[in-house]
Amino acid sequence: MRSAIVLLLVMAAAMFAMAQTRTAKTLDIYLVDVEGGNSTLFVSPSGESLLIDTGNGGAAASRDADRIMAAVKDSGVKQIDHLITTHWHGDHFGGMEEFARRIPIREFIDHGPNVQPAQAADDFIQKVYPGLYGKAKHTIVKPGDKIPVAGLDVRVVASASEVLKTPLPGAGKPNPYCATFKPQEIDKTENAQSVASHITFGKFRMVHLGDLTVMREFDLMCPVNRLGTVDLFVVSHHGQPISNSEVLVHAIQPRVAILNNGTRKGGQPEAMKVLFSSPGLEDLWQLHFSLLSGQEYTVPGMFIANTVDEQPAAMPIAATAAPQPGPGAAPAPVHNGAAHWIKVSAQQDGSFSVTNGRNGFSKTYRAGRGPS
Image (cartoon, rainbow, N blue to C red):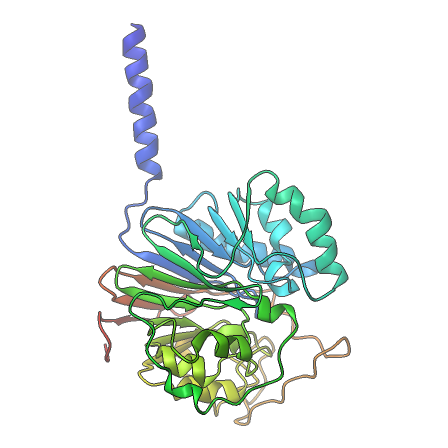
C-alpha cells in the first residue's frame, strides 16, 4: 500500500513539473510600457526568465508593477530568475520594491555602487535593496560576464563605465564610423554606468544597452566593432540623442529597432535620423507616439503601441521641443489608463516576429538579413 502511495505521489509531482514546463520554442521578449523607463522581460524556451529594469517609483510604482506583472502573467512564468538593474536612476529601479512584493526574484544584478549622488537612490541602495537581495542572490557584473539563462547566451558588454575589450564571436572588424565620430562631453552620471547586454538565441542576436551614452558607445565600438551586427536593437536611452550615435547604431546594423520611449521622453529628431538612416534597418517600432518627434520623424501608427496621453484636436507636424531637464521641468502627462506592450518572438534560426499589443498588428522577419 505504501509503495502505491509513493508511486502516486511521484506521478503527481511529475505531472506538476510537466505542467510548469514551457513548451514554446521561441524566445519571447516583452517591452513593457513604463512611461519611458526601460522594462524588458525575456522568457527562454526553457521557461527561465530575465527582467531588465522595474520602472518608476513613487506614485507610479504600483502602476508600473501592474504593467510588468501583466506581461509576466501573459508569459506564464512564476518567478523572475534574473533581474538586471541597468543603473540607479529612478525610472529604472524605482518600482523594484513594489514589484518584488508581487513575485519571487532569485537573482539581483547591477553594476555596483551609485556614482551620481541622489537621496532617493542612496536611501534605496543602503536601506531597501539589501533586504531584497538578502533573501536571494546578488551579483555585481563586469564586462565579459555571462548571465546563466538556459538556452541563451547573455553577455555583459558594459558595466560601471567599463566596456568589453575582446570582440564577441564573429565580431571584431574595423568600424568605419569611428573616423567621423564627434566626441561629446564625458558623461559622469549613472547613465554611463549602465549594465549593457548582448543576447544570443541560436542565430538570433540582439542588444539592450540601457542608457549607455555616446562616449561609452565609442569606447565599446572603436576602433573595432566588438558587437558585430544584430537582428534587434532595443534603442538606448529611450531614443535620446545623448546616446544612439552612428558609431554604434550604423555599425551594428539592426534589422529592427524598438524605441522604449514615453510621450515626451525620447524620440528627438537627432536620434530618429540616426535610426532611420541605419544601413539595413527594415522597421522601427515605438512604445509611444513621441511629441518630441512629431509627425516628421515618427513611424506609421500601426508600429506604435501607445498613443499620446492627452490627445490634441490636431497633431502638429513639427516636433515639440524637449523640456529642459532639472527640478523646474514640466511633468510629463499622466498616463494611468490601459498600456500596451510590444512583444518579440524569436526562433533559433534567426527569424522573429514583432507584435503590437494595442492593435494586434504583427510582422515576421525571415531568417537572414534582407526584407521579410
